[in-house]
Amino acid sequence: MGIYTNKGLVKHAEAALKLRTKYMWGGILRPVTDSYIAALKNIYGISPGTGYTASRWSELISLAGKGYYGCDCVGLIKSYYWSGSADGGTGSPRYGAAGYPDINAGGMYSAAKVRGRIDTMPEKPGLILYRRTDPHVGIYVGGGKVIECTYSSRGDGVVRSGLGDFGWEYWFECPYIGYESDSLLAEPKVKKYTLAYPATVRAKPSAASSKLGRYTAGSVVTVENGSDTVDRQTGYTYVKVSGPPERWIVKSACGGNNS
Image 1 (cartoon, rainbow, N blue to C red):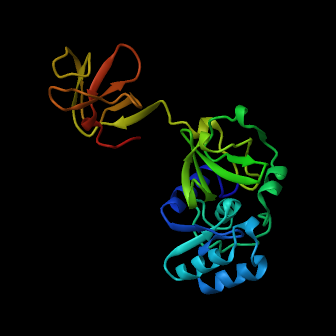
Image 2 (image 1 turned 60 degrees about the vertical axis):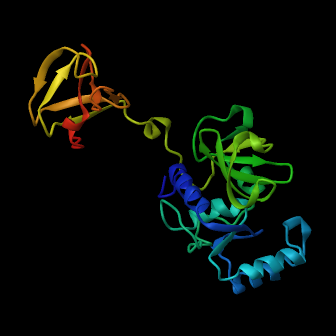
Image 3 (image 1 turned 180 degrees about the vertical axis):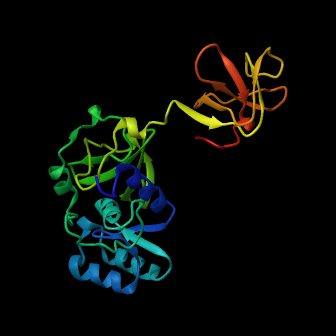
C-alpha cells in the first residue's frame, strides 16, 4: 500500500484547510511567490476558463511573499502524494516522482479502478468526489463533509463544504494511494487496561449502585470502548467492563495504561 493512504490524505486536507490559500489553476500547494506566479503565468497567460484574468493575476501578485499557498482542485490531491510524508505537507517536494503522475481531474478519474455514481458512495473518508461537467474534484473527509480547492461561491482556495453543496456526480478511490479496509479504520470494540489503582466494581455507572466486588491494582481488565458514562452525583466517569454480568468501574483506575 505504500506510505500514502486515504487516512493520510484526509490529514493532509485538514492541514491545508488551516493554511492561507488561493485557487491557482495548475497550483500544487506551493507558496505564492513572484517566481511561482511568473511560472504559472508563462504557462496559462490570460485565460478566463482557468480563472486567470488580468485582475486575478494582479491580485495574486499583491499576495506574493505574504504566506499564501496556491493550489487547484486536483493539485490538493497530487500535493499529498508528492509530499514525501504519510501525513502530507506543502510544497510538493517530490513532484514528478515515478509512479505518481502529474494528471488532471478527468485523467485521475479515468485511471481509478474503484469508482461509482455518487448515490452508491460508501462512507469512507479519503474518497475522491468528481464532477465530469466542468471537471472538478474534492476530498470526502467523512460525516457528509468535503474539503476542496475551489474558485467559486463556496470560496477561494481550500475550503470545507457539505456533500450536498455541489453537484458531485461520481466518487472514486485515488489510484495512487492505498485505502485501508473498514475493519482497519474502525475503532476496536474493547480495550485491555492494566489498572493503575484499585477499583470497586459496581452494577451501574454510579457510586450509589450496589458493589459487585473489587479489582486490585495491576489487574488486567477489558473495557468497552465508547462506554464512558458520567455519574452526575459525583462527577466520576465510569467505563463498562466487557462481558456479563453488567459491571462498571471508574475510568481513572485505568490510568491510561492499556496493554
